[in-house]
Length: 228
Image 1 (cartoon, one colour):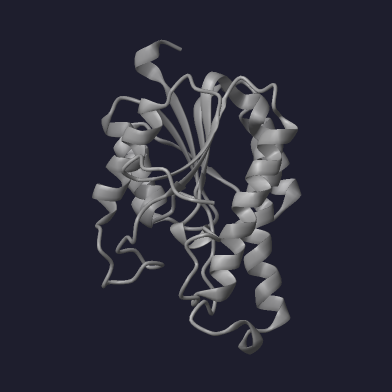
Image 2: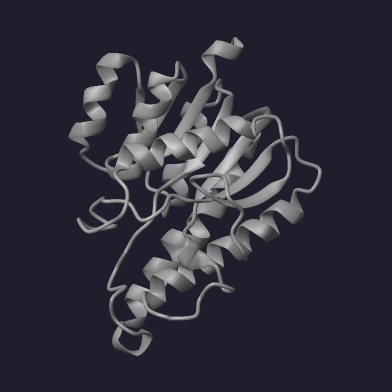
C-alpha cells in the first residue's frame, strides 16, 4: 500500500455521517472499506466507485469475528467506529425502560470497545483508531442535562476509550474521540447547525492532520479539544 492509497475502515456507513465519511475519504484518494448492518442504498451506490462494502453488527461477537476473518489480509490507516443508536433520548431516565437503557449502553459504549480490541491488529503503524463521540459525553460541560441516556452512553464511551488507551499504552497507533458537531442527519434532526459534508470534511481534516501520532485526544470536527 502506498501513501496515496491509505485505507480506511468506516464502521457504520449506511447513512448520515458514516456515509458522508466514506464519500469524503474516497474523494481524497483513500481506499475505503465501509460496513452496514442491513440494506444501505446510499452506500451501495459507492460500490461502483470502488468502495468495498461489508456487513457487520457490532453488537454481535460472531459477526465481528467473521468480519475480522474476512479482512485478515488488510491493514488500515484508519478504523473509525461510527455506529451508534439514539433511543428515547428526549425522555428522562426514569421514563425509559431498562431494556432501552441496556441497548443504548451496549451499542454506544461497550460494542465499540469490543470491536476495537479485536481490530487493533488490523491497524497499520502510525494509524488512527477513532470513535464517534459527542460533546454531550463531556461531563464537565453537562450543566443543563437533557438527552440523558444518550449523554450517559457517550460519557461511558469516553471513559471506556480512556481505559482502552491505558490498557494499550504501548500501542503504535493514535486514539481519537471525535465530536462531529450538531449535524442534520436522521439522528441529529433537521434543525441542526451543520450539514453532513461540512462535518465529514472537518473530521477527515482532523484525522489526516494527526496521522502518525499515538496519543489520545477528545476533539471536535474543527480540531478543538473538548473537556472530559
